[in-house]
Image (cartoon, rainbow, N blue to C red; front, side):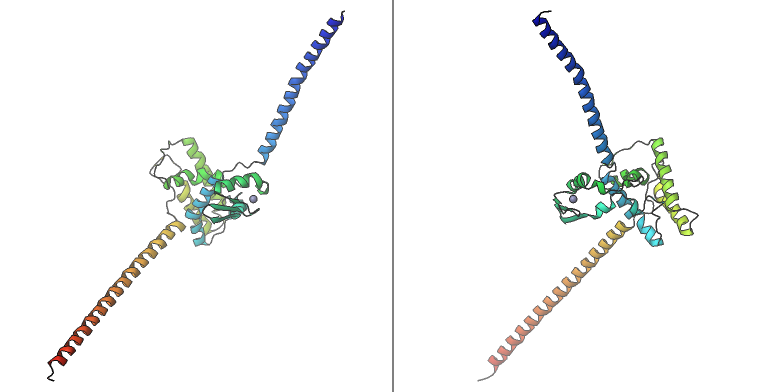
Length: 277
Ligand SMILES: [Zn+2]
């Protein structure tokens, strides 16, 4: 075997070894990347903040005022609607709105231009503080509590939604589970009353019959707020009319007094002129 042949053999062997090692390295890298992604995925919270906020609004408007009226306390252990079972509750309390364009993180005092940026900051920097035990995502209850319908109330353009019986059944089931776990009928007469109320308010509308709308009993807080606003506006209007009338009356009175004084002065001057010297 010549020297050139030996060199060729060595070169061929080197090529073969590289062609075997390279895929092995690729596989190892791929596995490493997958494991890293899985680790990142584990730390990520799969719960929508915006949908959670909608659920909070629905509860504060259509449920909590009625519970307050009945002086009923939800159980934190069995009822998913209890504020303690809201995964984002603590972070939400750490949001400070300094100005319309300034949102501050209550943990590290960083300031952001919008709530979206602050939400992303919470996700990136403070998600380790979240209690990620099961059944703590309020957004998961959106189907049962009609988030899309609630959202459509404030939009002028309403989407046409086709009714899917399977989805309706699933939402109805979740709604009834909420009613029965938050207001167990065997607990008390108040709980039984609120169980019926909850079903009328949220569950009855889970049907393809479009005549039935959720939130049958109307709202509590926000409607009252608009009522207070209307009453305040009306009172201000009445007060404005009253003060305007008083002002016009006083002005007319002043003018009358002035003209009377002028007339009396003129009469006085005439009398002086008429007197014989
Ligand atoms: Zn922070």
